[in-house]
Length: 117
Image (tube, rainbow, N blue to C red; front, side, top):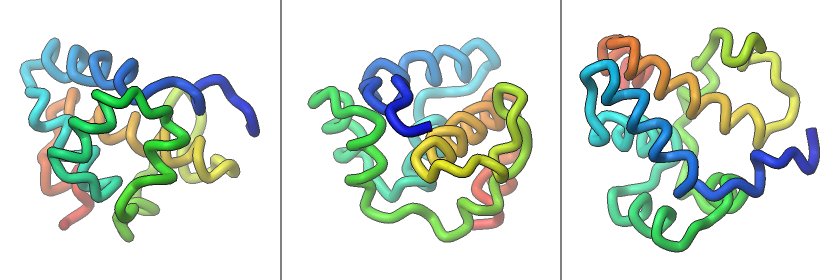
């Protein structure tokens, strides 16, 4: 999936959709940020900077302080595709983030979302 247009989409364009999805289901932007931080290692300042600087998702993941070692435990379907079967590492990371936000919106317990961390 090299060159997929999602790779050049800014994180700042994606985050409002994540937050809106969570808020529609009674959850908060802080919960979205918590799961994105867990996945990527960004702190609050790093996430704020990513939004302010309009960095692309490719840059967002390339610059991530540290992907969580339990990220590979994120499984299931996103857009009809099993996230564990996605071959492109960047696409898989993006879909992991999508899956975590979906789990927040569905009201899954945070301890489960964060894979026991």
